[in-house]
Image (cartoon, rainbow over all chains, first blue to last red; front, side):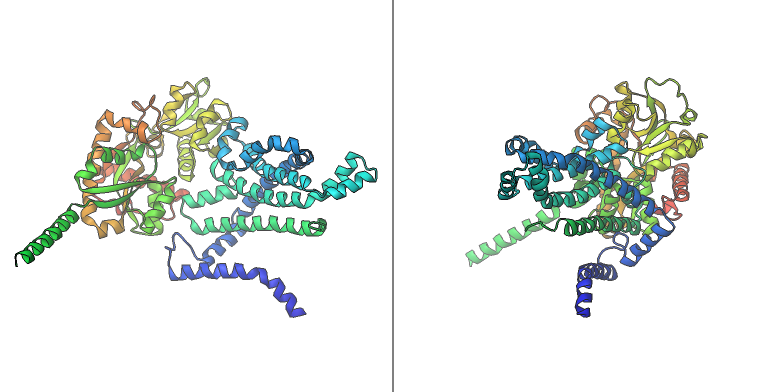
Length: 254
Length: 323
């Protein structure tokens, strides 16, 4: 029983350990020039130095702040909008092309458009990320509503529930599992776009700016350390959503 | 018997023609390009047949950043590069000695102005670099440009705490100045010329690195040049020599033939309106550099080392190759 629990806890680490071993093995054999691919030890030291003596923590927190702001804006706008669009198939179909068009367009390709509208400040980075994440959330929320089980909605109506009550008490709850799928994808997408924006649209801080600067001066251990920090952040955000989903949206798929 | 002789003759003829074809085959060379006006010699040499005259097939491979060019040279995917940032070259040689050497050097100074501080055309209160105190400045992107943008102001007596500076991609410089989000831009050609031509910006001062950081208006500020990997030069010395011969002709045309500028519009994202007049750096083969110019190069690299851009002190003479 106890052994089984330990085995379960360790299972997710197998892939990570195998990846680090493979990285170490390639570096040890010098299959790639060490200048281009530093060892995991060198990168781990760069992470340590970055957190202890450097400003990796500061950049990490700035990226987290931008990501959460973008995600918050996306949720605040797109969940209600998705509920409205999803409750009328006709309205959704009329806008489906626009939603799918922009959903298929790389958000980073829209940097110039956002720069024209919002200028080169902080707001552009957050707005592009919110835009990209918002479309994912909107699409999933609307589909969650459209795919809500009709029998449950009908039962509520038969029992005399008002349209608003049906929406809030049945449809919203029915759509939440799908909405959460959109939110989980959306938060990861926000992080990706914020980092790309920090790399390419003028930033003096953040993980993206750190990656590009380290690359420019060939400080590869620091570059990989920052990429690792970004990866851990993305994994952490994803994990938080999985935990919330399991804890609060327990009716999903039932 | 006669048929046997005929067969032998045909085989011999085929074999000899194969040998001849092989002898005539051009030597392949892979050259990394960073698409900017400093890549012009590549296009001149290609379009005017200088590579072909040396029996070379030089494939230009555009890469978006200088680190990717260095990566290609380290891995052996590239043999050479048309225009690699000097500080990028110094850094990789400091980290990994004998990776590459410059065989041509682009000088920029007050006569050949590539970099400049530009202010909005309507702003008449900023007259000198000293007036940038308290201003919001945008800089060309990358730590190298930021080092120079700050270094120039420091040499002009403006301390870093007296202004704010933010890196911005070159594509947003015109909009950033026009919208009033920034009071000044440390920017590069052809953006400087485009800002002036469109009436958006006024060149406050150009040729800054030579004048302020190297101390002489006619100093050779080496920001980029042509490089070859040491591996390529060691393994294919004859090919490297022929490449350098073709390159020298292209540099001469770039410096002296105004018609070569037509290639800026065709290949290097320069608008036709400014291409005839846009300032360019002065191209030199390393063999033509004067001792003072090599000292200028050393001076700039030493400053970059002190700033932390180049990992450790390096003698620039070890990075130069004469052909």
